[in-house]
Image (tube, rainbow, N blue to C red):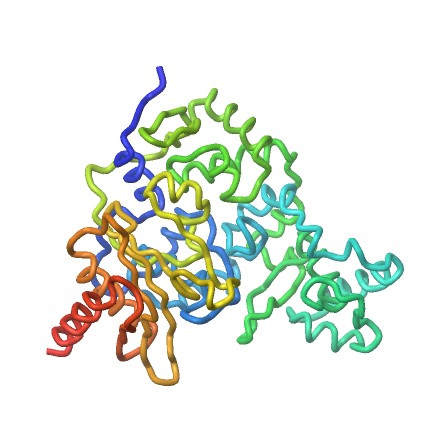
Length: 409
């Protein structure tokens, strides 16, 4: 008999799985706490937009509170790395043990050298590999310079006007033949031999059959999500839905997931055997647009009734909520959304717009003000300034003024 859950129960399962159900401890989080939450999430999506903070830092802040971002940097740059960059949901920091399982499914060929002239490709690949094998990790710009920029510049107008060297590097990276040893201060990938990047060189040589790999990825994704449809589970690591559904059915037969029904969520759903249903969800958090809690927009709307889209690429006059909008989670409600910018030159966190959801709890403004002050301090900013745009602006401005006055006493 299929278990039936209320929508509230489904929310609490999902929030607990993502580390968002509990009130965070006071004070700076320890490196161990940072490591634990990263293992729980399985991945941290990377994005180059830096209007607030690099996106991979924010999910950790949302779950453990204030922490030193250098801890996360060390996990991905110091040997033996506990995080490595590879394709997952998108470009992401992942548990290195997942690398052999992701590799059969993460062929982003549209980004690589498949459309290059074959002679040029065959000429560049061995030279790139030889250069990386013989020295330190390098950016695409440095590699291009070492190999002779004019000789290898692409004039075909591919993608983002990437050079032929960059195309070859991305192809090798996607195939798992080279890895990312970190990022430069300009946030460029530092490419190196994958065996030197991974904490255990054997991981580079481990070949996992694609279907076996998919079972592992589906199990990890279902554990990180707690509850979701086959599409949600497939979306976590961007694996094909049909094949992932088959893997889920196999996991169900083994008792690793079980089918459930949820009031108002009219899709076949699965709960991980590791999922826990807490009595209450008591956390609060600002969520990055690239947070794993909001990856699958249909799931977000089904769980919380929260319609959310990133408007970074929407022309300014057509934006509804703003440029870099973060959902605000309060207990088990997506209570509001705020458009944020870190104005580092003036030392201010700017709330350019703030909107409350129709069912927002009465204490939304006060709780959001506390979260904004936490973020400002973490970013090294001295002030939070609330703009006039949005239906929450007046109440939020008053709550921020009160919270800042209290903090100053």
